[in-house]
Image (cartoon, rainbow, N blue to C red; front, side, top):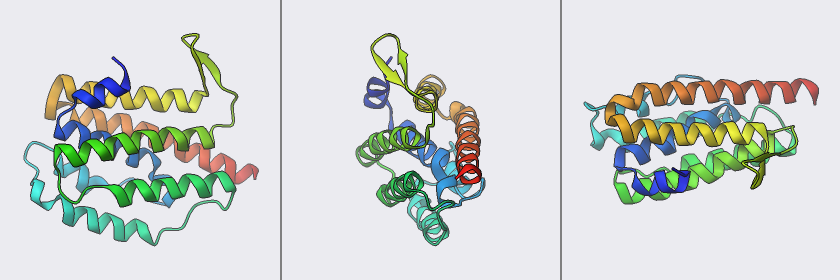
Length: 182
């Protein structure tokens, strides 16, 4: 199933996880550590209090709002701006309608960020379009997260977080490499 179809079929939690996972994978561009989004992840668990989402989100925004971009290169500047927009667009209330708009926007932004930072030339994907390796991997991660939540509901949350953590490490390595090689 395509990413667009998965987003269209996802429930409120799946959409919120999708948006959060995209943000989580891109948070290294804001200097965020591995734990900065953990309260939001915990809030999406079966026993999470949906009414606390907005307060937790405000705390995350405050922590990341003052964080500096890790590099002053043009690609990193545009990419960091896209991450800040993802964070700013996060809905204060967890509802399916708002989460759908956010998840869709985060998906597009995360793919754009990975395209900006991918040093490799695009390769044909199924013979139809060219995707750079970093972009193709991000697309696979987005699909995997939505499939996990679609198949396992709240039980897929831990694995979705692991997929996101892996992507965050990859992006952090790319940003670090670019910083070292100018």
